[in-house]
Image (cartoon, rainbow, N blue to C red; front, side):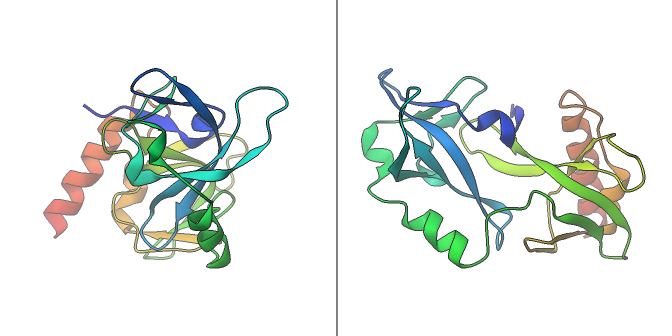
Length: 187
């Protein structure tokens, strides 16, 4: 079973090998806007005076993602430089925080304030935490299984997405299941 975690909770997590070696700390999460997934983590050293590392952890090199650490097989999983992060920034990909979510029919759902990631052996972006328009600081979790289009300013989702929200991570799996079922019925 997949658990879900907010991207903001991943930042600052230690990166540890299966052998228990603490090799880095997650600095940032770089998103792949073209595919609605995660491209890589940028890293920093461990400790108060450690700065950014000139290494990155590609998403496909993550062994597992949990609430307490990002696990990798060994230190060879870390890329020697941060080219994937540079490429993502150069292409305009990366930051979806602050982007608006809109349905294909033109209904504005709100502003993205965090990204929900399915943890486990094959982590993936599962949805977004949004602040719905006109509801102040009230936040909801919105599953996004099949985004139609993603840019730094807008995420376009199928109309059915608006019907499936959750108030917290505990209710999020039910919202994901409901949306998946609806999209399969409509396909």
